[in-house]
Length: 214
Image (tube, rainbow, N blue to C red):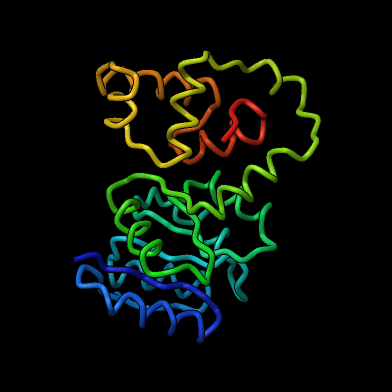
């Protein structure tokens, strides 16, 4: 059973998500909050397995709440609830360690799969969100000189692109006919090069700097 905390300032959205979650046998709504400040309090009280977090909320935004959680070294996975006009915020959330993104009108299958993947520590992006990330990546930009010097090997880029598509280390190892330990070693090298400490942050930074394509 996965305990889920719903954080969104719109009552209708929270109620809709609750109704969907209640149809799944493996999910339980641990609580609901209308802003980041309430969420931080409820996280301490309810100890959820996964947090569904809106980005734009009064009092405290989802991004600010995620920053506070990161400062506290909280390991509870966060899935961002996003709309069609929040691409830049979406990338910021990914850089803060979000395990995935869901559009607020997502279907139950995507919702359940994303929650289960996040609870396992994996990152899963829906097809529609992936398309938006690709579109955002394709916008022309001029990275600072120090960023352009960072290079990934072909293997590192392939592994990180596979991670961005939601594949686990075990699956990538099978595809490359190597050990899972080898994949994790390559990812550690990528983290060191990019100055990050998680898969989601690595994907976000690599996309921003044009080091990978998805």
